[in-house]
Length: 278
Image 1 (cartoon, rainbow, N blue to C red):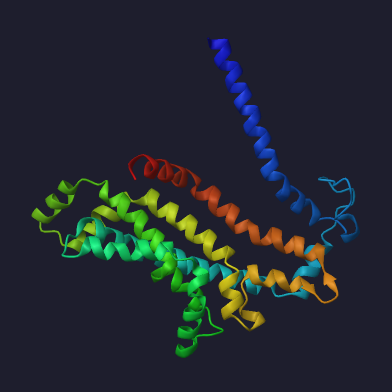
Image 2 (cartoon, one colour):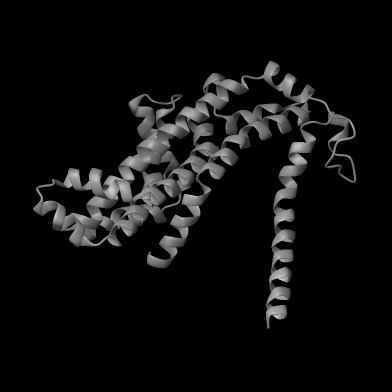
């Protein structure tokens, strides 16, 4: 039996390794292509280890385009969405889960219905609203919908489900000791929801950083572009500057990789917990 179990584990690990290689190959090719001369990028068969290594693509990319400005725009938009989105979602989730009031169940249907509406359906109404308010070509339309709009509804649902799993006796004991609802939230609920905060932070980080459609609609000035929108400028009427685009793609993916490796433990724990208790 032990030998059979060992063979099964080895077979499973081989399958997982094969799937992992398939998943990582495109990024490995992208990283390799960013260090190749443009004439060698689409060489067949592809070479993961370049025969000629050059950093010219990175140098030309920084000289010919404001990549650092695009990175900064994406960074501060993403960080704002992560911080404000996590705070608002956790407070709303706490209110739905632990503060009982008339119509709370019916009111919770609003975020559930909002989650079912595709973002593409409300693009035109939102654009008209932001246009009337005078916020076109600013970063505010990229931030607020992900905090208090449809983009933030997933976080409200996630926190509500987590707070429902917390015993209500804990809140009642805090009330007996004279703790206010804000005190219960800040002193008890928020500290024990670190794994859920990490999960929502990663989702918000990925969605805000990779968002392409909203910046395309609301931003007109090149200096206000995000990195996802700026990548399109490497393609013009004369063709695509593949070497510089590959280098820019590598730079744009680094924050996502770093963020995942920093919070991967909390992310996996929270997903497993929500899958069991949610």
